Image 1 (cartoon, rainbow, N blue to C red):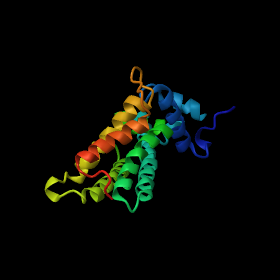
Image 2: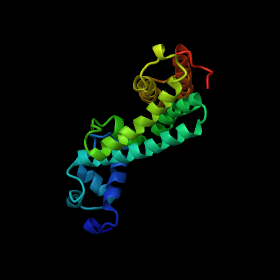
Image 3: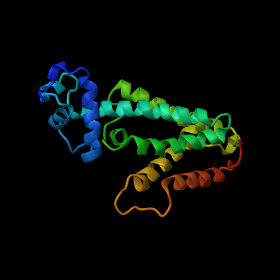
Image 4: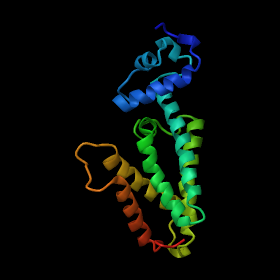
Length: 204
């Protein structure tokens, strides 16, 4: 098949899709732009019409991942309404669901070493995603006496860290980290212990 090169109808997105596949297969530093071009069926020179280098390509995969992630988190938050507790727990579970369904995006976002400040667009959508979990935490924290209330950003960061840990250790087939419990159960019970410690469990 001849190379489509500059005439590729959606070259930019084809390269992102190729990069996502290669990221899943080889990791974010395990492939070259030439390999991405070959997988997208374009010439290597055509890549540079859209991306300055591999880092820019991975950053765009990350940006698109955060867009999906933000929408998923918002949907989870909305699905838990009007219960602040249900909304908060749903956003935690959404993290695990995203990592499983979109592994290439997840790796680009969290394991590639690409800063969320790589571009204003990436920074904005990453902030949008984080703000959903922070809003859920803020809603729930209103049920805690003011003198015992952690800042919502800290509250949400704890759940983010717990979710990320469960994903990294037990939901991505990491060698030597098999758990006797499903990742979903680990996350749910972990969140339960955390919320019980704040005196929030079983409150709306």
